[in-house]
Length: 223
Image (cartoon, rainbow, N blue to C red; front, side, top):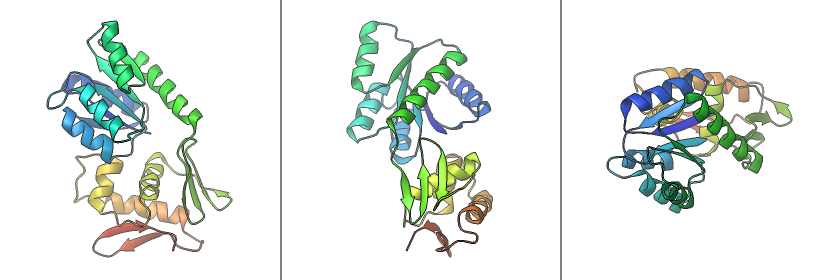
């Protein structure tokens, strides 16, 4: 699962990122509110951890704008503010939970798991391209009736393709979304993983869904 952390204190952000990655999550970090809002609206995240005291644009502004633009991802607010009024304001603005600094990492994990379970229980819409089906909530993929086992990175890659069917995605776009915004465009990791994915979803099957667009990137389409 992919998580966005919006936190201007680099030590805190690094602590959260390292801990979550050790738990198997993919993590992107933004250090100010404006960058956080852009990434939240542009990326595909399962959860957003959002600090309230941010430069450029404070956390409540980010949250309000994100919800106004129909952002549906669960948001866990972080703050040093302990007043009930602040918590109520954050929740009324659209936050799903609230955690006061300082906090233990185990409590952060527990709240994160609870939010992700809640999201799964409400049910995420299935993504479909031709006879390929991806269930984001249950992390399942089928080609016709056959279940396909994918690694975490392969699943994230396919999820990104299936949210943009018929759109040519460049290597840089894929790298920044599936890996992180510091992705090295000279790396061949995207080509390697696209090849892994193609073997699993297309090998021995028709039609071939994952196509190379020479000189541009890749496209997933069912026609």
